[in-house]
Amino acid sequence: MEMAVDILSQAQALRDGDTLVSSGGNFELGFFSPGSNSRKYVGIWFSNISARTVVWVANREIPLLGSSGVLQITNKSVLILASGKGDVLWSTNSSRSVRKPIAQLLDSGNLVVRDENEENPGNFLWQSFDYPCDSELPGMKLGKDLGKLGDWKTRVWIAVSITLSAVTLIFLCGGVALIKRKRRRQRVKTEEGKFSISKCRKGQWERPLYAFNVIARATNDFSHRNKLGEGGYGPVYKGVLYDGQEIAVKRLSKESRQGLEEFKNEILSITKLQHKNLVKHLGSCVDADERMLIYEYMPNKSLDSFIFDQSSSELLDWPKRLHIIKGIADGLVYLHENSRLKIVHRDLKASNVLLDSEMNPKISDFGLAKTFDGVAEEGRTKRVIGTYGYMPPEYAYDGLFSVKSDVYSFGVLVLEIVSGQKNRGFKHQDHHHNLLGHTWILFKEGVLLDVVDPLIKNASYALEMKRAIHIGLLCVQQHLDDRPSMLQVTVMLSSDCELPEPKEPGFYVPREFVSIRNTAFSNNEMTISNLYPR
Image (cartoon, rainbow, N blue to C red):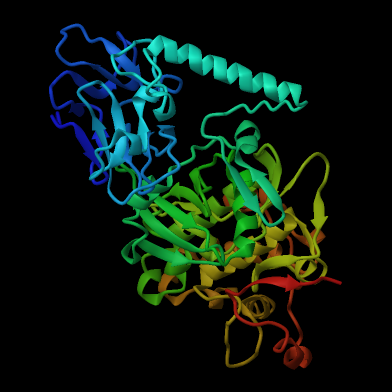
Protein backbone atom coordinates (compact mmCIF):
# COMPACT_ATOMS: atom_id res chain seq x y z
CA MET A 1 0.00 0.00 0.00
CA GLU A 2 1.50 3.37 -1.07
CA MET A 3 1.68 5.85 1.76
CA ALA A 4 1.82 8.88 -0.67
CA VAL A 5 3.23 11.18 2.03
CA ASP A 6 6.64 12.71 2.53
CA ILE A 7 6.92 12.22 6.31
CA LEU A 8 7.55 9.12 8.42
CA SER A 9 6.73 9.64 12.11
CA GLN A 10 7.77 7.57 15.10
CA ALA A 11 4.33 5.96 15.16
CA GLN A 12 4.69 4.72 11.58
CA ALA A 13 6.76 2.08 9.82
CA LEU A 14 7.69 1.88 6.15
CA ARG A 15 7.53 -1.67 4.76
CA ASP A 16 8.12 -3.25 1.38
CA GLY A 17 5.50 -1.80 -0.98
CA ASP A 18 5.13 1.46 0.95
CA THR A 19 6.84 4.66 -0.26
CA LEU A 20 7.47 8.24 0.77
CA VAL A 21 6.89 10.82 -1.99
CA SER A 22 8.34 14.33 -1.76
CA SER A 23 5.81 17.15 -1.54
CA GLY A 24 6.41 18.27 -5.14
CA GLY A 25 6.40 14.72 -6.49
CA ASN A 26 10.02 14.80 -7.69
CA PHE A 27 11.42 11.97 -5.59
CA GLU A 28 10.24 8.73 -4.05
CA LEU A 29 11.74 6.57 -1.27
CA GLY A 30 11.07 2.90 -0.71
CA PHE A 31 12.27 -0.67 -1.06
CA PHE A 32 13.61 -1.87 -4.41
CA SER A 33 15.51 -4.74 -6.01
CA PRO A 34 18.00 -4.02 -8.82
CA GLY A 35 16.94 -5.96 -11.95
CA SER A 36 15.80 -9.49 -11.15
CA ASN A 37 17.87 -9.60 -7.97
CA SER A 38 16.00 -10.88 -4.91
CA ARG A 39 18.02 -8.68 -2.56
CA LYS A 40 16.22 -5.60 -1.28
CA TYR A 41 17.54 -2.10 -0.70
CA VAL A 42 16.05 1.14 0.61
CA GLY A 43 16.72 3.99 -1.78
CA ILE A 44 15.58 7.26 -3.34
CA TRP A 45 14.70 7.56 -7.03
CA PHE A 46 13.12 10.03 -9.46
CA SER A 47 9.37 9.48 -9.24
CA ASN A 48 8.51 11.14 -12.58
CA ILE A 49 10.82 9.03 -14.76
CA SER A 50 9.40 5.77 -16.13
CA ALA A 51 12.74 3.93 -15.98
CA ARG A 52 13.59 3.87 -12.26
CA THR A 53 16.77 5.85 -11.65
CA VAL A 54 18.08 5.40 -8.12
CA VAL A 55 20.05 8.37 -6.80
CA TRP A 56 20.75 7.27 -3.21
CA VAL A 57 20.86 3.95 -1.34
CA ALA A 58 20.81 3.49 2.44
CA ASN A 59 21.92 -0.11 2.93
CA ARG A 60 24.17 -0.47 -0.09
CA GLU A 61 26.65 -2.63 1.85
CA ILE A 62 24.12 -4.89 3.59
CA PRO A 63 21.15 -5.93 1.42
CA LEU A 64 17.90 -7.16 2.91
CA LEU A 65 17.04 -10.77 2.13
CA GLY A 66 13.30 -11.16 1.60
CA SER A 67 10.47 -8.66 1.88
CA SER A 68 9.99 -8.44 5.66
CA GLY A 69 12.17 -5.38 6.27
CA VAL A 70 10.96 -2.25 8.01
CA LEU A 71 12.18 1.36 8.09
CA GLN A 72 11.28 3.25 11.25
CA ILE A 73 12.39 5.85 13.78
CA THR A 74 13.45 4.71 17.26
CA ASN A 75 12.70 6.52 20.50
CA LYS A 76 16.28 7.80 20.35
CA SER A 77 15.59 9.69 17.10
CA VAL A 78 17.55 7.20 15.00
CA LEU A 79 16.21 6.04 11.63
CA ILE A 80 16.86 2.29 11.27
CA LEU A 81 16.34 -0.41 8.68
CA ALA A 82 15.65 -3.74 10.36
CA SER A 83 14.97 -7.20 9.01
CA GLY A 84 11.84 -9.12 9.98
CA LYS A 85 13.89 -10.81 12.68
CA GLY A 86 14.92 -7.47 14.14
CA ASP A 87 18.49 -7.46 12.86
CA VAL A 88 19.52 -3.83 12.23
CA LEU A 89 21.01 -3.58 8.72
CA TRP A 90 21.45 0.19 8.55
CA SER A 91 20.88 3.24 10.73
CA THR A 92 21.53 6.96 10.89
CA ASN A 93 24.33 8.09 13.14
CA SER A 94 22.96 11.08 15.02
CA SER A 95 24.04 11.36 18.64
CA ARG A 96 21.27 13.83 19.47
CA SER A 97 17.65 13.05 20.13
CA VAL A 98 14.49 15.18 20.05
CA ARG A 99 11.00 14.90 21.48
CA LYS A 100 9.10 14.38 18.21
CA PRO A 101 11.50 12.95 15.61
CA ILE A 102 10.37 12.52 12.00
CA ALA A 103 11.99 11.48 8.73
CA GLN A 104 11.07 13.61 5.71
CA LEU A 105 11.85 13.25 2.01
CA LEU A 106 12.38 16.76 0.66
CA ASP A 107 11.65 17.77 -2.92
CA SER A 108 15.40 18.19 -3.44
CA GLY A 109 15.86 14.44 -2.96
CA ASN A 110 17.34 14.94 0.52
CA LEU A 111 16.11 12.58 3.24
CA VAL A 112 16.33 14.33 6.60
CA VAL A 113 15.71 13.38 10.23
CA ARG A 114 14.54 16.33 12.32
CA ASP A 115 12.21 17.45 15.05
CA GLU A 116 8.63 17.81 13.87
CA ASN A 117 8.68 21.54 14.66
CA GLU A 118 12.22 22.26 13.44
CA GLU A 119 12.51 23.83 9.95
CA ASN A 120 16.07 25.14 10.20
CA PRO A 121 18.40 22.85 8.15
CA GLY A 122 21.23 23.71 10.49
CA ASN A 123 19.43 21.90 13.30
CA PHE A 124 18.59 18.72 11.38
CA LEU A 125 19.74 15.55 13.19
CA TRP A 126 20.82 13.80 9.98
CA GLN A 127 20.50 14.16 6.20
CA SER A 128 21.24 11.88 3.26
CA PHE A 129 22.97 14.73 1.39
CA ASP A 130 25.85 14.27 3.85
CA TYR A 131 26.33 10.72 2.52
CA PRO A 132 26.17 10.99 -1.32
CA CYS A 133 26.35 7.93 -3.54
CA ASP A 134 27.28 7.86 -7.22
CA SER A 135 24.63 10.39 -8.31
CA GLU A 136 25.08 14.11 -7.79
CA LEU A 137 21.97 16.15 -6.98
CA PRO A 138 21.78 19.94 -6.91
CA GLY A 139 22.30 21.21 -3.37
CA MET A 140 24.16 18.12 -2.10
CA LYS A 141 26.47 18.89 0.83
CA LEU A 142 29.09 17.07 2.81
CA GLY A 143 27.72 18.31 6.11
CA LYS A 144 26.53 21.52 7.66
CA ASP A 145 30.06 22.79 8.38
CA LEU A 146 30.98 22.54 4.68
CA GLY A 147 27.63 23.56 3.31
CA LYS A 148 28.66 26.98 2.00
CA LEU A 149 31.95 26.12 0.33
CA GLY A 150 30.92 26.14 -3.31
CA ASP A 151 29.82 23.41 -5.69
CA TRP A 152 29.71 19.74 -4.79
CA LYS A 153 32.96 18.67 -6.46
CA THR A 154 34.84 21.59 -4.93
CA ARG A 155 33.56 20.64 -1.48
CA VAL A 156 34.69 17.06 -2.06
CA TRP A 157 38.25 18.17 -2.79
CA ILE A 158 38.22 20.52 0.19
CA ALA A 159 37.05 17.72 2.44
CA VAL A 160 39.70 15.36 1.06
CA SER A 161 42.41 17.97 1.54
CA ILE A 162 41.36 18.63 5.11
CA THR A 163 41.28 14.91 5.82
CA LEU A 164 44.74 14.31 4.32
CA SER A 165 46.18 17.22 6.27
CA ALA A 166 44.73 15.90 9.48
CA VAL A 167 46.12 12.41 8.82
CA THR A 168 49.54 13.87 7.97
CA LEU A 169 49.55 15.86 11.21
CA ILE A 170 48.72 12.74 13.19
CA PHE A 171 51.63 10.86 11.55
CA LEU A 172 54.02 13.74 12.25
CA CYS A 173 53.04 13.69 15.90
CA GLY A 174 53.91 10.03 16.00
CA GLY A 175 50.43 8.66 16.55
CA VAL A 176 48.76 6.32 14.11
CA ALA A 177 45.20 5.16 14.78
CA LEU A 178 43.38 2.85 12.42
CA ILE A 179 39.79 2.16 13.43
CA LYS A 180 37.93 -0.40 11.35
CA ARG A 181 34.22 -0.10 11.70
CA LYS A 182 32.52 -3.49 11.47
CA ARG A 183 28.81 -3.55 10.76
CA ARG A 184 26.65 -3.82 13.85
CA ARG A 185 29.71 -3.98 16.13
CA GLN A 186 29.09 -3.38 19.82
CA ARG A 187 30.83 -3.96 23.09
CA VAL A 188 29.28 -4.90 26.39
CA LYS A 189 31.05 -3.50 29.44
CA THR A 190 31.09 -5.62 32.56
CA GLU A 191 32.52 -5.09 36.00
CA GLU A 192 35.24 -7.62 35.21
CA GLY A 193 36.28 -5.99 31.94
CA LYS A 194 34.82 -5.86 28.44
CA PHE A 195 32.78 -8.56 26.77
CA SER A 196 33.14 -8.14 23.02
CA ILE A 197 30.06 -9.08 21.06
CA SER A 198 31.90 -8.58 17.80
CA LYS A 199 34.42 -11.17 18.89
CA CYS A 200 31.67 -13.60 19.75
CA ARG A 201 30.02 -13.06 16.37
CA LYS A 202 33.23 -14.13 14.65
CA GLY A 203 33.73 -17.16 16.83
CA GLN A 204 30.61 -18.35 18.55
CA TRP A 205 27.76 -15.84 18.01
CA GLU A 206 25.72 -16.96 15.03
CA ARG A 207 22.33 -15.55 15.99
CA PRO A 208 21.06 -12.08 15.05
CA LEU A 209 21.26 -9.04 17.27
CA TYR A 210 17.81 -7.54 17.68
CA ALA A 211 17.31 -3.79 17.96
CA PHE A 212 15.93 -2.67 21.32
CA ASN A 213 12.94 -0.90 19.80
CA VAL A 214 12.01 -4.06 17.87
CA ILE A 215 11.84 -6.07 21.10
CA ALA A 216 10.07 -3.24 22.92
CA ARG A 217 7.37 -3.15 20.24
CA ALA A 218 7.11 -6.95 20.23
CA THR A 219 6.45 -7.02 23.99
CA ASN A 220 4.18 -3.93 24.08
CA ASP A 221 6.96 -2.02 25.84
CA PHE A 222 7.50 -4.90 28.28
CA SER A 223 3.96 -4.61 29.59
CA HIS A 224 2.83 -6.55 32.64
CA ARG A 225 0.30 -8.40 30.47
CA ASN A 226 3.15 -9.85 28.42
CA LYS A 227 5.14 -10.96 31.45
CA LEU A 228 5.46 -14.75 31.68
CA GLY A 229 7.43 -14.93 34.91
CA GLU A 230 10.64 -13.93 36.62
CA GLY A 231 13.76 -15.73 37.80
CA GLY A 232 17.20 -14.93 39.13
CA TYR A 233 18.20 -13.62 35.71
CA GLY A 234 15.26 -11.24 35.44
CA PRO A 235 11.74 -11.07 33.98
CA VAL A 236 10.59 -13.07 30.95
CA TYR A 237 8.13 -11.61 28.44
CA LYS A 238 6.10 -12.91 25.53
CA GLY A 239 6.50 -11.01 22.29
CA VAL A 240 5.38 -11.07 18.67
CA LEU A 241 7.73 -9.92 15.88
CA TYR A 242 6.62 -8.11 12.71
CA ASP A 243 6.33 -11.37 10.79
CA GLY A 244 4.01 -12.86 13.43
CA GLN A 245 6.62 -15.08 15.06
CA GLU A 246 6.05 -15.51 18.79
CA ILE A 247 9.11 -15.14 21.00
CA ALA A 248 10.10 -15.30 24.65
CA VAL A 249 12.35 -12.50 25.91
CA LYS A 250 14.56 -12.86 28.98
CA ARG A 251 15.47 -9.35 30.12
CA LEU A 252 18.46 -9.04 32.42
CA SER A 253 17.56 -7.30 35.64
CA LYS A 254 19.83 -4.34 36.36
CA GLU A 255 20.16 -5.57 39.94
CA SER A 256 21.26 -9.08 38.89
CA ARG A 257 25.05 -9.41 39.01
CA GLN A 258 24.76 -13.16 38.58
CA GLY A 259 22.53 -12.59 35.57
CA LEU A 260 25.24 -10.78 33.60
CA GLU A 261 27.50 -13.80 33.94
CA GLU A 262 24.61 -16.04 32.91
CA PHE A 263 23.98 -13.84 29.88
CA LYS A 264 27.53 -14.30 28.61
CA ASN A 265 27.59 -17.98 29.51
CA GLU A 266 24.27 -18.77 27.85
CA ILE A 267 25.27 -17.11 24.59
CA LEU A 268 28.56 -19.01 24.46
CA SER A 269 26.90 -22.31 25.46
CA ILE A 270 23.69 -22.53 23.44
CA THR A 271 24.38 -20.55 20.27
CA LYS A 272 25.51 -23.54 18.20
CA LEU A 273 23.27 -26.14 19.83
CA GLN A 274 20.53 -27.59 17.63
CA HIS A 275 18.29 -30.36 18.96
CA LYS A 276 14.55 -30.92 19.04
CA ASN A 277 14.62 -31.21 22.84
CA LEU A 278 16.57 -27.99 23.47
CA VAL A 279 14.81 -24.63 23.40
CA LYS A 280 15.86 -22.67 20.31
CA HIS A 281 17.89 -19.53 20.89
CA LEU A 282 16.84 -16.98 18.25
CA GLY A 283 19.14 -14.11 19.11
CA SER A 284 20.02 -11.39 21.59
CA CYS A 285 19.57 -7.70 22.21
CA VAL A 286 22.34 -5.47 23.50
CA ASP A 287 21.52 -1.77 23.72
CA ALA A 288 23.23 0.59 26.18
CA ASP A 289 22.70 -1.15 29.53
CA GLU A 290 20.04 -3.55 28.20
CA ARG A 291 20.85 -7.28 27.87
CA MET A 292 18.18 -9.63 26.53
CA LEU A 293 18.05 -13.21 25.27
CA ILE A 294 15.46 -14.13 22.65
CA TYR A 295 13.99 -17.65 22.38
CA GLU A 296 11.23 -19.47 20.61
CA TYR A 297 7.99 -19.15 22.56
CA MET A 298 6.68 -22.24 24.34
CA PRO A 299 2.87 -21.93 24.65
CA ASN A 300 2.56 -24.52 27.43
CA LYS A 301 5.21 -22.83 29.56
CA SER A 302 7.22 -25.04 31.93
CA LEU A 303 6.81 -28.60 33.15
CA ASP A 304 6.41 -27.60 36.80
CA SER A 305 3.20 -25.71 35.97
CA PHE A 306 1.64 -29.07 35.07
CA ILE A 307 3.05 -31.77 37.33
CA PHE A 308 2.86 -29.74 40.56
CA ASP A 309 -0.56 -28.23 39.88
CA GLN A 310 -3.47 -30.57 40.54
CA SER A 311 -5.76 -28.63 38.22
CA SER A 312 -3.31 -29.13 35.33
CA SER A 313 -1.54 -32.39 36.16
CA GLU A 314 -4.47 -34.48 34.94
CA LEU A 315 -3.74 -33.15 31.43
CA LEU A 316 -0.54 -35.18 31.51
CA ASP A 317 -1.49 -38.86 31.47
CA TRP A 318 1.20 -41.52 31.72
CA PRO A 319 2.00 -41.80 27.97
CA LYS A 320 2.58 -38.02 27.85
CA ARG A 321 4.75 -38.10 30.97
CA LEU A 322 6.84 -40.96 29.62
CA HIS A 323 7.20 -39.06 26.33
CA ILE A 324 8.49 -36.05 28.30
CA ILE A 325 10.94 -38.19 30.28
CA LYS A 326 12.35 -39.72 27.10
CA GLY A 327 12.60 -36.31 25.42
CA ILE A 328 14.57 -34.83 28.31
CA ALA A 329 16.88 -37.85 28.23
CA ASP A 330 17.46 -37.41 24.49
CA GLY A 331 18.30 -33.74 25.01
CA LEU A 332 20.86 -34.59 27.70
CA VAL A 333 22.46 -37.27 25.52
CA TYR A 334 22.97 -34.62 22.86
CA LEU A 335 24.61 -32.27 25.38
CA HIS A 336 26.81 -34.97 26.88
CA GLU A 337 27.70 -37.04 23.83
CA ASN A 338 26.77 -35.51 20.47
CA SER A 339 27.35 -31.75 20.63
CA ARG A 340 30.65 -30.20 19.56
CA LEU A 341 31.64 -29.74 23.19
CA LYS A 342 30.52 -31.83 26.14
CA ILE A 343 28.10 -29.64 28.09
CA VAL A 344 26.93 -30.04 31.68
CA HIS A 345 23.70 -28.12 32.24
CA ARG A 346 24.06 -27.90 36.06
CA ASP A 347 20.53 -26.58 36.65
CA LEU A 348 18.16 -29.16 35.23
CA LYS A 349 14.80 -28.91 37.00
CA ALA A 350 11.10 -28.94 36.24
CA SER A 351 10.91 -25.17 35.73
CA ASN A 352 13.75 -25.34 33.18
CA VAL A 353 11.93 -27.84 30.98
CA LEU A 354 9.54 -26.04 28.62
CA LEU A 355 6.67 -27.63 26.71
CA ASP A 356 5.65 -26.76 23.16
CA SER A 357 2.12 -26.91 21.76
CA GLU A 358 2.34 -30.71 21.43
CA MET A 359 3.83 -31.24 24.90
CA ASN A 360 7.29 -31.96 23.55
CA PRO A 361 9.90 -31.11 26.22
CA LYS A 362 12.70 -28.64 25.56
CA ILE A 363 15.53 -28.06 28.01
CA SER A 364 16.13 -24.34 28.64
CA ASP A 365 18.23 -21.91 30.69
CA PHE A 366 21.90 -22.58 30.01
CA GLY A 367 23.15 -19.75 32.18
CA LEU A 368 24.95 -22.12 34.58
CA ALA A 369 26.15 -24.58 31.94
CA LYS A 370 29.79 -25.68 31.83
CA THR A 371 31.59 -27.02 28.79
CA PHE A 372 34.36 -29.60 28.63
CA ASP A 373 36.95 -29.53 25.89
CA GLY A 374 39.19 -32.44 24.93
CA VAL A 375 39.52 -35.32 27.41
CA ALA A 376 38.31 -33.52 30.53
CA GLU A 377 35.48 -35.39 32.26
CA GLU A 378 34.81 -33.34 35.40
CA GLY A 379 35.43 -29.95 36.97
CA ARG A 380 35.43 -28.29 40.35
CA THR A 381 34.20 -24.89 41.47
CA LYS A 382 34.47 -22.86 44.66
CA ARG A 383 31.18 -21.13 43.86
CA VAL A 384 28.39 -23.68 43.93
CA ILE A 385 25.31 -22.48 42.06
CA GLY A 386 22.18 -24.52 41.58
CA THR A 387 18.79 -25.41 43.00
CA TYR A 388 18.13 -27.30 46.23
CA GLY A 389 16.64 -30.69 45.61
CA TYR A 390 18.34 -31.21 42.24
CA MET A 391 22.04 -30.93 43.15
CA PRO A 392 24.00 -34.15 43.69
CA PRO A 393 25.97 -34.57 46.94
CA GLU A 394 29.44 -34.28 45.35
CA TYR A 395 28.52 -30.92 43.86
CA ALA A 396 26.72 -29.45 46.86
CA TYR A 397 29.49 -30.44 49.29
CA ASP A 398 32.68 -30.42 47.21
CA GLY A 399 31.90 -28.34 44.13
CA LEU A 400 32.59 -31.32 41.86
CA PHE A 401 30.53 -31.43 38.66
CA SER A 402 30.41 -33.72 35.64
CA VAL A 403 27.82 -35.21 33.29
CA LYS A 404 26.82 -37.40 36.24
CA SER A 405 25.58 -34.21 37.94
CA ASP A 406 22.95 -33.89 35.22
CA VAL A 407 22.17 -37.59 35.54
CA TYR A 408 21.35 -37.05 39.22
CA SER A 409 19.13 -34.05 38.42
CA PHE A 410 17.40 -36.09 35.71
CA GLY A 411 16.70 -38.86 38.23
CA VAL A 412 15.09 -36.36 40.61
CA LEU A 413 13.03 -35.02 37.72
CA VAL A 414 11.84 -38.52 36.74
CA LEU A 415 10.60 -39.21 40.26
CA GLU A 416 8.86 -35.82 40.36
CA ILE A 417 7.16 -36.45 37.00
CA VAL A 418 5.94 -39.88 38.07
CA SER A 419 4.76 -38.82 41.53
CA GLY A 420 3.58 -35.27 40.86
CA GLN A 421 5.46 -34.27 44.02
CA LYS A 422 8.46 -31.99 44.59
CA ASN A 423 11.61 -33.58 45.98
CA ARG A 424 12.26 -30.90 48.53
CA GLY A 425 9.28 -29.84 50.51
CA PHE A 426 7.91 -33.40 50.29
CA LYS A 427 6.04 -34.41 53.46
CA HIS A 428 4.88 -37.77 54.74
CA GLN A 429 3.19 -38.61 58.02
CA ASP A 430 5.44 -41.61 58.73
CA HIS A 431 8.87 -40.03 58.18
CA HIS A 432 10.75 -36.85 57.39
CA HIS A 433 12.55 -37.90 54.22
CA ASN A 434 12.41 -36.08 50.91
CA LEU A 435 10.88 -37.66 47.80
CA LEU A 436 14.08 -39.61 47.05
CA GLY A 437 14.17 -41.06 50.54
CA HIS A 438 10.45 -41.87 50.43
CA THR A 439 10.81 -43.66 47.07
CA TRP A 440 13.83 -45.58 48.39
CA ILE A 441 11.78 -46.81 51.35
CA LEU A 442 8.97 -47.97 49.04
CA PHE A 443 11.51 -49.74 46.81
CA LYS A 444 12.93 -51.68 49.75
CA GLU A 445 9.40 -52.55 50.91
CA GLY A 446 8.44 -53.79 47.42
CA VAL A 447 5.59 -51.30 46.93
CA LEU A 448 7.25 -48.98 44.44
CA LEU A 449 4.02 -48.05 42.65
CA ASP A 450 2.71 -46.36 45.78
CA VAL A 451 4.70 -43.28 44.79
CA VAL A 452 2.81 -42.85 41.50
CA ASP A 453 0.56 -39.82 41.12
CA PRO A 454 -3.02 -41.07 41.82
CA LEU A 455 -4.25 -39.10 38.79
CA ILE A 456 -2.31 -41.30 36.37
CA LYS A 457 -2.46 -44.69 38.06
CA ASN A 458 -3.42 -47.26 35.46
CA ALA A 459 -2.82 -50.99 35.76
CA SER A 460 -2.07 -51.28 32.04
CA TYR A 461 0.98 -49.02 32.48
CA ALA A 462 2.19 -50.51 35.76
CA LEU A 463 5.34 -52.14 34.32
CA GLU A 464 6.38 -48.95 32.49
CA MET A 465 5.84 -46.85 35.60
CA LYS A 466 7.77 -49.23 37.81
CA ARG A 467 10.63 -49.33 35.31
CA ALA A 468 10.78 -45.52 35.11
CA ILE A 469 10.92 -45.22 38.91
CA HIS A 470 13.66 -47.86 39.05
CA ILE A 471 15.69 -45.92 36.47
CA GLY A 472 15.14 -42.73 38.46
CA LEU A 473 16.60 -44.40 41.55
CA LEU A 474 19.62 -45.58 39.55
CA CYS A 475 20.24 -41.98 38.49
CA VAL A 476 20.14 -40.52 42.01
CA GLN A 477 22.52 -42.97 43.67
CA GLN A 478 24.84 -41.46 46.25
CA HIS A 479 28.11 -42.14 44.41
CA LEU A 480 28.50 -40.73 40.92
CA ASP A 481 30.36 -43.80 39.63
CA ASP A 482 27.27 -45.90 40.36
CA ARG A 483 25.02 -43.74 38.20
CA PRO A 484 24.46 -44.69 34.55
CA SER A 485 25.30 -42.37 31.67
CA MET A 486 22.44 -40.65 29.88
CA LEU A 487 23.10 -42.82 26.86
CA GLN A 488 22.60 -45.90 29.04
CA VAL A 489 19.45 -44.32 30.45
CA THR A 490 17.92 -43.91 26.99
CA VAL A 491 18.61 -47.58 26.29
CA MET A 492 16.96 -48.56 29.58
CA LEU A 493 13.90 -46.42 28.80
CA SER A 494 13.40 -47.85 25.32
CA SER A 495 14.11 -51.55 25.97
CA ASP A 496 13.28 -54.40 28.33
CA CYS A 497 16.88 -55.00 29.40
CA GLU A 498 17.41 -56.13 32.97
CA LEU A 499 18.03 -53.26 35.37
CA PRO A 500 20.69 -53.41 38.12
CA GLU A 501 19.68 -52.96 41.73
CA PRO A 502 19.96 -49.32 42.81
CA LYS A 503 22.01 -48.31 45.82
CA GLU A 504 21.12 -45.74 48.43
CA PRO A 505 20.21 -42.34 46.94
CA GLY A 506 22.10 -39.15 47.61
CA PHE A 507 20.99 -37.12 50.67
CA TYR A 508 19.16 -40.14 52.07
CA VAL A 509 19.65 -40.09 55.84
CA PRO A 510 18.57 -42.94 58.15
CA ARG A 511 15.85 -42.20 60.69
CA GLU A 512 18.26 -41.64 63.61
CA PHE A 513 19.80 -38.66 61.77
CA VAL A 514 16.57 -37.10 60.57
CA SER A 515 16.66 -34.20 63.04
CA ILE A 516 20.12 -33.21 61.78
CA ARG A 517 19.00 -33.45 58.17
CA ASN A 518 16.05 -31.17 58.71
CA THR A 519 18.29 -28.23 59.62
CA ALA A 520 20.61 -28.58 56.61
CA PHE A 521 18.51 -27.45 53.67
CA SER A 522 15.51 -25.33 52.80
CA ASN A 523 13.08 -24.77 49.93
CA ASN A 524 13.03 -26.88 46.77
CA GLU A 525 13.13 -24.00 44.30
CA MET A 526 15.74 -21.85 46.03
CA THR A 527 18.76 -21.31 43.81
CA ILE A 528 21.94 -21.01 45.85
CA SER A 529 25.19 -19.33 44.93
CA ASN A 530 27.11 -18.87 48.17
CA LEU A 531 27.89 -22.41 49.25
CA TYR A 532 31.63 -22.88 49.47
CA PRO A 533 32.69 -26.51 49.26
CA ARG A 534 35.24 -28.11 51.47
